[in-house]
Image: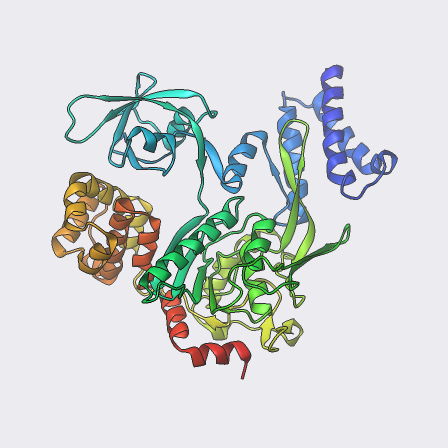
Length: 548
């Protein structure tokens, strides 16, 4: 017991030294004070005298979690089990066989083989059913998403065998797949709105974001030139969609903002009691320093998204449209702990070029902070701009044309677009939450892929001529009833247009990609349509931007 207790003391002290000592540069003697002794004393007493057996690791982890919880909403502890999974979306790749899949009727369906991945190279494609992995049956056995990931992911160069059933092929197809690095894309969509206006949607700021953005911009310019009479680049304007983008790497946000700003412009600065002020400025490298820019944001746009939109707004480089962003402006640094777990500790705050603090208040505690979006909805902020009030102390002037902007948490857009809930119903919500629409479309595509691609050989043809008719809607409703969702006639009629739209978009996504999905849904989206209206009216755009 003494040896075990000593071991726990050492681990606890080392963790606490990391938390309290490293960032401030304090000496061992300064850190080893009465607070650390008090904590170690309690832990030792529990280990030695408590009535029941205790899990020492769990005690230490809970103590760390609660301590960080008291500091601010974004200082967190991450267990060693969660570290790898947490980093994958930001690193921009994982190692595996390269498929998107869904589990339908207890069977693994391939939604798509990721471009350039090992599965695509072997000829595995959408609609295939994986029924065996390493000779083991995986169909009809209650397999879960995590089980599939555990079986198919693995180190680059390792091999996994799968058995596949394919429509219209009688025999089981066997594939031996050599795992490889698989890209995780942070760019959801890019397409030409018209011959001189592009659209790019980014879902997170990861290690691959800038290369994806730059590639998308090159492609848009190429497509724009192809539509021009003299084959010159006509891409003049860009809609950058950061709605729902919760952030990611600071470096990616700075590089993205750099694409839009002239050289030597302040993009963001950070500052904390133990972290001296650090300035991040633009360079001459950016590739979209001229032309109109509109950034779409909402209450889900946070952190890195707020850095980009704040810099563009402060320098009067473009117009921000949507709703007030989340308000996450705390800088975290990761510290590795001895058992491969880590903490993310807040060390500074983000400020926009005008000096606006991005972080919203958290002085009322974590519970109230976590309810902020619900409180915005209940207060009417998401539906009515007049519900938002800023004191004079939070007013700032932009750096080029001295327009009034606001601090105090999040980025307030230049043009407010209310959240439209008029077509939302419980029936439609259940259809989405239970995955009924997704699985219905998956079944529909599986049965009709060849027919659809023959009738609609390209997306433009599909988008202009395909419609979700009454027969297809009836099939969807019948399928929903079989899945336990009883039809509510009144709510169905209320949500009918949205159901049509999303069904058409989901079919397009499975036939082509997420770009086509967003091209369809955006056509009926109020925030997106407001951006197009503004771009078409040069006088209004200039008036809003110059405050004249």
